[in-house]
Image (cartoon, rainbow, N blue to C red; front, top):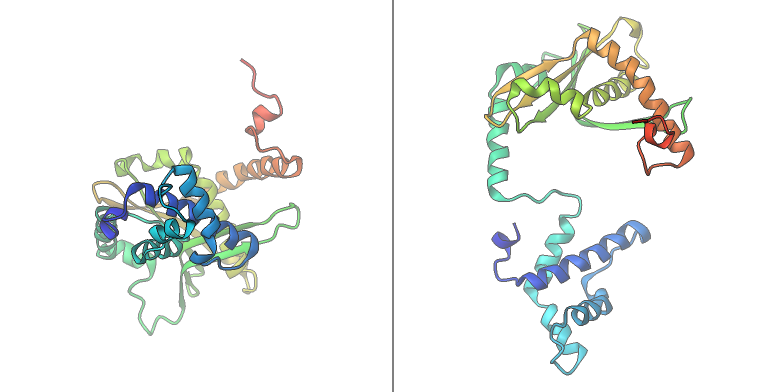
Length: 269
């Protein structure tokens, strides 16, 4: 990305500018203020000295002028704006756009995501990138997450939780990834979050059903919506109790150096 947007920047200057970005981000997080480029002059002097750059120049101002060019400032502003974003190269971006179009043209996916909802479908509510936070009355911490897509059908009394996944493997191998990457934990947490936010105040909430679906697109751009069965969800919820117990132990003991079974000495050869 840097080569495409800023082809003339030398690699050593990029390194210095990115080190300055770390300083900038620390001020943002720790002091809640914006540190502008011109306020980092002391750090610039320090990095130039460490890298032995422009040390043949007579004054610090001359060295500073070598860094504070319009192109360098533009690149630094680009880095600042990228702090909360994932920077990708053009082929990756084009691949993502292609997959978006494939998903949007899939009738089953469109129905799940509520993309074809009409004005007459007043009984259907659709939420995208829904952030939910829930406090737990029996734990010292709560749960939160950002749900890709949630569709609430008030007539059928169903909440559809749809989570988009990409995989570098063949689509038929995705069920193995659910266990390997612990996607089942995500499914349980999302169910808890959506139920708390969207069902808590509804009458006859016990009659409602929550359906989790992983909408998966693989490296060959094959698409399949993997619905979670009631049997699987029931088992996952039971297993999740153990996950919470382990998380609570780590939280209360402030032990994060080892996995739980190793930390408590349960593993023997």
